[in-house]
Image (tube, rainbow, N blue to C red; front, side, top):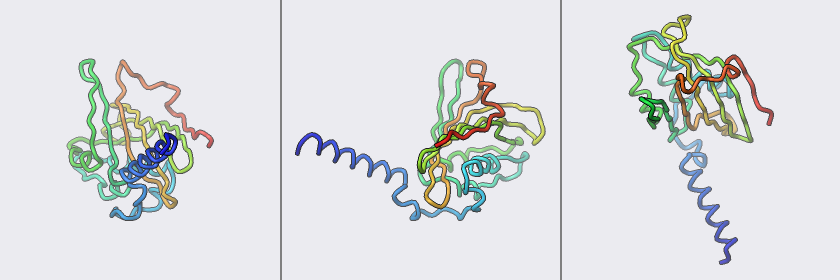
Length: 185
């Protein structure tokens, strides 16, 4: 075989492995609770719902069954933060996140800005969010959440999320706050 043929075979093999790992080739074979179509029918809706399911007063169970309808099997979360000048990360599944989530304090996370970039059936969303202890309380933290999404022909799925908390060494640009945009495809 010539080099070009070997290159094409390697590319084909890599594509098959990647699609298999992402679950794209078996999108309808896995078992996921049936979502409310209004939760997963648009990019803004699935992002909004991802905040709604984790929000609530202290001691009140979160909407974990609803949350389970948002993610593909194998979805990955990456929390990034800085501790004493060193970058730290925690890589987890949505189930790991739900298991570790504490409801001792009220948490109300809401979106205050968004940028959607979409190509074909995939999308990347930069979401600016604030966290409060009560729905109308003072802002206690601000985050940037990056969502990786895909459309399977009937609904949107979250394939992964990465987030970082605002800090003095990494302030959120003021131009991102209150700005709602979708990059034309």
